[in-house]
Image 1 (cartoon, rainbow, N blue to C red):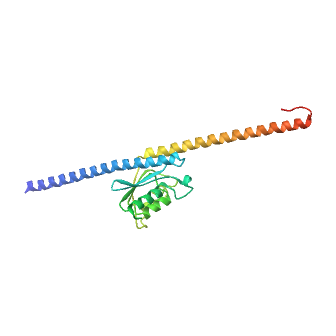
Image 2 (cartoon, rainbow, N blue to C red):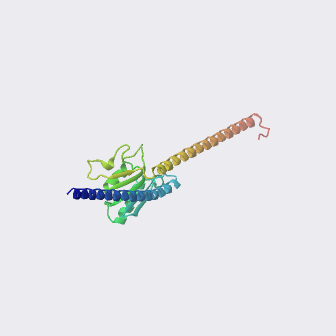
Amino acid sequence: MGRSAEERAARRELKAELQRQQMEEQMELQRVLDEKFMKEAIRQAKKAGKLGEVPIGCVIVYEDQIIGRGYNRRNTDKSTLSHAEITAIKRASKVMGDWRLEDCTLYVTLEPCQMCSGAIVQARIPRVVMGCRNPKAGCAGSILNLLQMPEFNHQVEITEGVRGEECSLMLKQFFKDLRKRLKAEKTEKLREEEMKTEKGRIEIKAEKDRDKFPHMIVK
């Protein structure tokens, strides 16, 4: 009897250990997939950077396949709606033939804003994976958490920090380069204005000299 109880306890322990191993394997597989698809989102973000846009990229995945891609084109398109997430959602919905993206995962390099967070909830996307936080405009936990409001009829699972350092450094480098470029442009503009001012002074002096000495050739 005692042996039987020990055997049952051993079987329970073995079952629990197998379940734990399976869970760890699933988590590791998900981690690998998250890294893979965030890398694709970063690739989209770099397209935005080449246009001089803030480098933000997004992909939407269904059954381990990318069905929607997008990157920030707000200045290029002169449109508030041209955010990476909105573009990716439009393209994914077209592929799925439905506005509901209930079995999809959205990967984005930067925490979504209020508009994109609202669109994610409206599209019924169950999971969002984001690279880094957006402390000034993020609405997935930084300023607000529109993705997990209990008052809504849909809440979203959030995973953050996937390739987070890479995403953060990409943004920091963009703004560092932008400040440098704007400073250089300002310096060049001031130099041009100084040259114009100096040229004007020379022309005024020459005009005065001609009036004062009409028979002299003033260069």
